[in-house]
Image 1 (tube, rainbow, N blue to C red):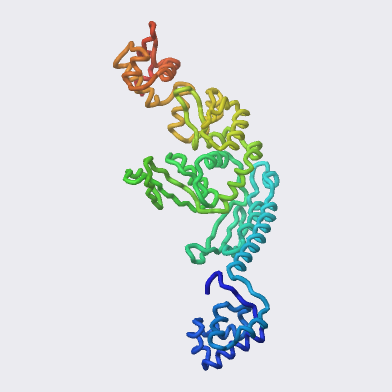
Image 2: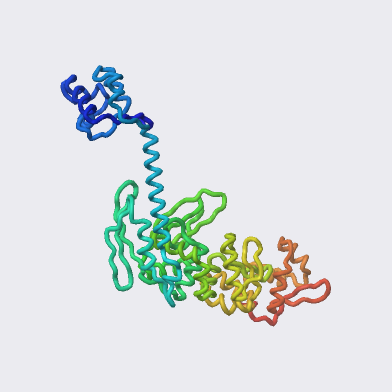
Length: 434
């Protein structure tokens, strides 16, 4: 039957009569089946009025075999309609009703202030409002168990064209401790995609923290390695691997739980992030965000949080300003030059070792000397009393002004003469260990 078939609604007694005539003429529905090119059971269905309308093509066959005539038919037609148009109208009507319900249920999701308590978020209250948005169609909740500290739910949905049961757990309360604040900052910067709640990163400390945090909140962990074609695999455990065929080579590990409901809750927090940050410890949140999206610029002695979302830039700049850690936005990063505040408020909570080392060096000249500065020191050690221009040319750099400035500021090198010529400060004991 064609999707755009014209359908006829007939007087019921007439419909019953003509299909009985058909059966009588061909001595049964089985023998009549090839004539109408429909199953015998369908012929009996039309006769017994199980179908409320008849396709025009079947009616034409009945006329062709003199079961009915056109004049008789006209008197017995109640109405006609196009099947495709009716289907479309029914879909649109259903979609409209569904959207109206979803809109109403979405409005019932509580405002952040109603689930935000002194030291926790009431996930349970949010969940029972959000549940209405997903507990229909192919997805059905089988049970919801309330344990002391967590909820366990079972739901059935279609997965790869098969109905499958999924069992998930959620903390009834999400405690607003340092671990959550740091994780939320990480997630805002390096979150996994889709219905996965987790972090995409390379740093083992960050990935290890993510795994521990998710397990603490009753999540099952999955690790997926995304790696460029022909690239050597890192020494890291994973459950699945996907090869990426792109010009830019690299890899990243996603540590996450497959939990679309908890992921939706975090997006709910992101939608309300300005209100949420009013109640959080800002330095720990921005430490997590820095480990995800931050970098230390030795070139212009700054700390930078990468962000291109205009709404988030506006919000982040507001709260970084409260920490005295916002100077300007350069089109890609929120920039701060305040070394003292960064050292006291952000550095103690960082987990990314390389960023810790670079920040520690920029703030106080301590720790392992960054590679780009070590290159400059090595050259000066072998070639003392060279000018800035000569050093830059030898190292094939456009300039080394910032590097020389940092090394001089922290006592690694000395300058003399004009134009300035640089040599090692042999009194600096750190040089021997780095």
